[in-house]
Image 1 (cartoon, each protein chain N blue to C red):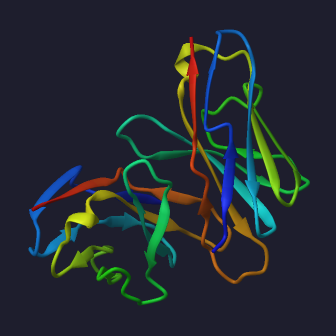
Image 2 (tube, chains in turn orange, green):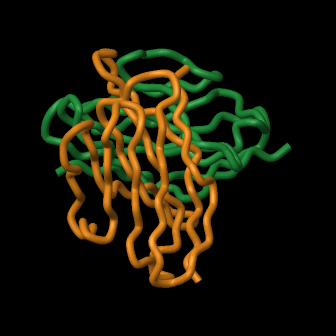
Length: 117
Length: 109
């Protein structure tokens, strides 16, 4: 089946620094990638949708300048948390959907645990 | 607007008992409904979708448009079914997935 990877799997950074998280589709081309945030024991909240080669569409309440998303190729999307603060600590999950598959299925990455100290 | 509600945060049953995880939705058009499962320390994975009308690991789910429900059922629960289950809805083709709050299922021996 389709595999999505994320790197790193966990990261600790100091307040005020920036962190980049990568999401890759390993065996298929992902025209659309999604970024979610998940708090402990809570559901996934969609942060933004990114289509390859175009600007990401952010959900209401998500700061575009803080969570920079780039989807420069059909297999890679990145999420950069700029000037991170402790409240940005969370589990970030990406998913990817392939092109022309006729299915709406999204394939999920394993997630990245971000801790901001 | 699309919304998914899973009324039970926690559900505990004994092995061999039937289990039903409830999911209700609101959407004005024709939605596509999914059940995702997340086992401990693993990634979220698709369990089943309503258009496939399939049974996966003994689980089935029927879309009831009249009641706007998509409950997940299994006649005989197994310990390995213990996991977090999310119901999700997608509206128009290519649109976003909306997840319910999730139900933590525990199957006791």
